[in-house]
Image 1 (cartoon, each protein chain N blue to C red):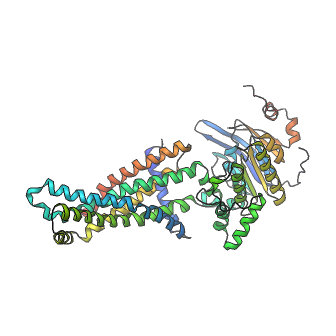
Image 2: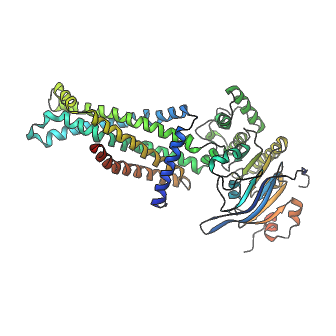
Image 3: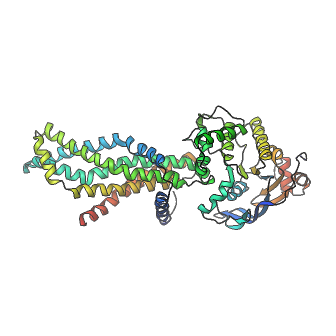
Length: 248
Length: 256
């Protein structure tokens, strides 16, 4: 982990190039991709769901109680849906799911690295990028946006629960508000971000795994590094992506 | 060990010239020259840290040397890009120190891996070949086991079966007896010897285990501090005047 920033950036770019080149080059190993989709997507359903449903609930509560005089509780549907779909859904899903899957990638590939399994792949004329990085990249690029869509829906539903059962809002009012303010553009900007987040998480997770040195201790350090770096990249890139999507 | 009948093959599978490698300021290999002849078992002997494992990794293209050339069957593989090394790696197998079995797969899938990767064999043909290779290393009934359920010696044997899957011309052994008890080490040594002779495979064995070296080696290369100190047969080695080699063969402490 003592590599220079410039070296790391360069090598991340290089790995990106290799991964996408390997992705489009046949043969396509569907079975490996499916295994990863299950691992990365299906098994993250729980954490992603809990994260966004409670976020939607908190959003509804906070909005109603922090700005009571404006009669804002009748606009909770717009506040919750806009903020969840544009921002909180994609970012929180990426942070929570990213921590889970990114650390898993580094731990798996890093352990293979320090136990010579990566070298064994290479020595059998098989590409570690094709066998390990590509399936994870495909799975994340498909599943993180999918989880985000699901999370968006659950977040809006969470807002509805609080609105109806806590604030006494008619459900029809909430829905009308959601449907009249939420645009396809909001959805697209949120989903668009989650593709980039998925890419960052996977490349960092796989890169840290492939460059792991020094036994169990090294795997531990690399895994921690992935969680921190992936979260930081998600948060920083979120600002620029938001600017980009607002301008576009 | 003059009992070993030496095959009269002189033509070299590997010709290594001026091999040099350093990590930072530490010179691991300093202008090392040797060759590996077809059909022989060459032992690379040396103490820990003498650069012998690095040498072996370079023979498989896993690490490029800083300088020098490695001719494999006439082609210099020293600085080839990864994908251009694939033909070499289908002809040469490597047995790693830890076995390096994929722990996400069972024994069967581990041995079948190179076959699924590089042949169009049907699953029946693959199953037959896996049985055959496991038979060569005297294993049966372990196909469904996970690598973590195997003993150290069994892991090495499964790894050996996997390395033989594509009927390689040469097998590179990295410390094949490290971490094994003396009896298991002897078994692995006999296995390497019999497979190498029966299948006519060229073998390069990196080890610091003198008993193994004497059991399997036709010729030896002795490295100390990254330099080649000796290359030749056992009789010459025993007659050698090189103090480092004499100390090593006698198991004596070196004078610094």
